[in-house]
Length: 315
Image 1 (cartoon, rainbow, N blue to C red):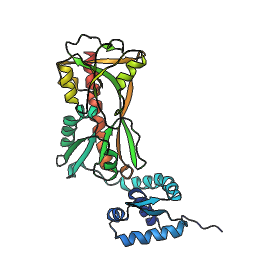
Image 2 (image 1 turned 60 degrees about the horizontal axis):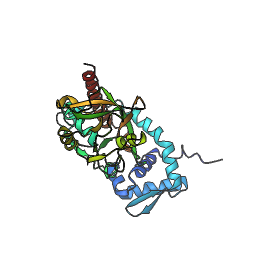
Image 3 (image 1 turned 180 degrees about the vertical axis):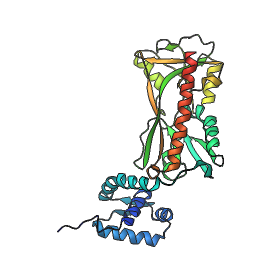
Image 4 (image 1 turned 120 degrees about the horizontal axis):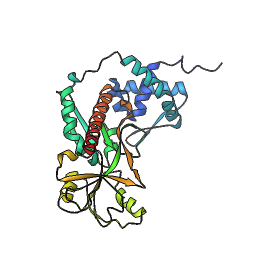
């Protein structure tokens, strides 16, 4: 009769296995589980014997999972996550009791509308929390995996398997220009912007090597000249305020704060160009009440800004 791998296993060992798979480091796993490293080693030996597989092998800087361990983790994680959620749902999450520093990495094009509004919203519900917003950079995914940053907000990116992604909102493209810019229409096409240079905002990891507006114009046979690039939205705003350059952005741009600027809907082949914004965080926090709450707050702020811009356009 074949060995029953479920009934013959101490389920506490599965918890150790999942933490080891997430951390890939004995010291970090022991710290997270509040046990000694020898206890982690003993648990790993029992797991290896039980599954007849090495599970994790030592490599420079930590551990590497075997193919069997990767397959096992993918198979059991959804079930244990569901069990954890069921057991923890009785414990009410109260933002008022939070006393911690929350570090969030935000892409430049989102930061322009998120910073002040998010701070005020979080302070209303969690007055003892300190908010630290930093610019998204090429190392942000590593920083999330190392718990240096709690979560990040950015466009669609390729992300490591240790990272979880959650959809927040869908954006539509806008062209931002100075109020007395020669082009003055409710919506514009690539042909309307012919002859005008671009001031582009760099989002590290997303458009390092290309400028979407320039690509759209070139596909329609229009010469595109990127005159200015920056990771700082305010720098691009300063440039377009005093020139005929235009800044590709989205319906997230807080146009109400810039009476000297105008926002025009950008159409591609007669349709609005849409793209999504996501939050990114470590897999181990997928069911964390703090993360769930933060996602709700960030989504609420982004949607409020989009709705506000829509109201301004209709008026």
